[in-house]
Length: 235
Image (tube, rainbow, N blue to C red):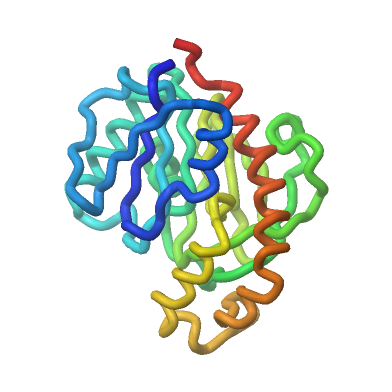
């Protein structure tokens, strides 16, 4: 099988639990680290799928690599290659496919519930997940649903939490988190979460019962990742 290309934009926002899932299944992957200036492939033909991780930048920034990734996503979509995006990665997918990315009404940071949309696509991708379940969030911007895509998740603080277009899945939330990632993000961004609100949790709030929360999140991630991995090119 060709490797999955994983695009990392910040050194501490890597694939996290997603990498554990791949290793458990024996699926090869190749990390492309934008934070260390790794070159972006001209074509997705060497990959069985593309995965885009998060980052504190905006997809509307003028950085050259953003346009390169948008182009690669469009090429992958044209070739029916599976694409998966987490937070910034989901926003990149939206913009590449004709959506827009703009400030969310509020920052959404910490553990908050999402709700399944009522449609056949959500039922197919989310399987036996309950109608409402907790995931981790850290974003100030949000995407719109691009033409032809179907929303599958929403939350109180952010209308569009996930959408599907064929074998492309864009997530606004973070299901890839590990306990160490939550702790590190909270420490690195202490100023941003210094004044909690109804949509922003403090470090203390987001680390309460952290191991149990992560265990439940990974159960959610297993179902979502399994649905996406089923679409990988088997060659």
